[in-house]
Image 1 (cartoon, rainbow, N blue to C red):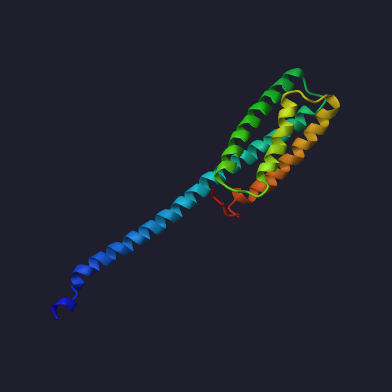
Image 2: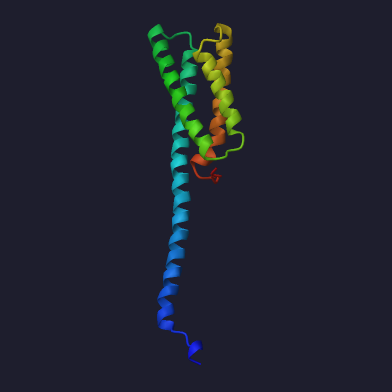
Length: 156
């Protein structure tokens, strides 16, 4: 009969420790995902701001009334913003799955780099600037729900 006796005073702390450990693991996992989403949302917000700035610069570059100094300043800013957005977009693409994002990103940067590398004449410059504005707006529309937590991130 002594074999069936359970010492509840010894088992109670073990059960409490197991429950506390399980709760801690659950909270840690939730916090980790939340923090990851927060970091990516911040990166996406910065990318959206930079894309909007690129669209503004392309619009200004297509004006006929800017000086060569202004053109040079806008163009240098355009190049640095394109590089920044490319790094951010590559990071976002590496971390999460967003439907259609990679194709939109490739299209946007194709037109940006054609403009940077001078693979367009004056007539096609206006076409390129139009494509950059359109693909930039499409990227913004795709990314905005993730920047304000309307869409859940699917981490890779």
